[in-house]
Image (cartoon, rainbow, N blue to C red; front, side):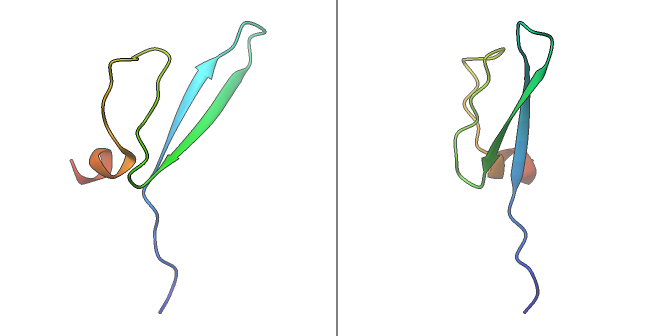
Length: 49
């Protein structure tokens, strides 16, 4: 059996206080980026490229 791998993408955003906030997106979740709001990709699409 083993562990099934889940495609995961992390987006890091720099906040006003100088710290990074990490947001996780998995499989077919749409990736949301404050830097690239027009981005239309899922984590699975990134890993299949």
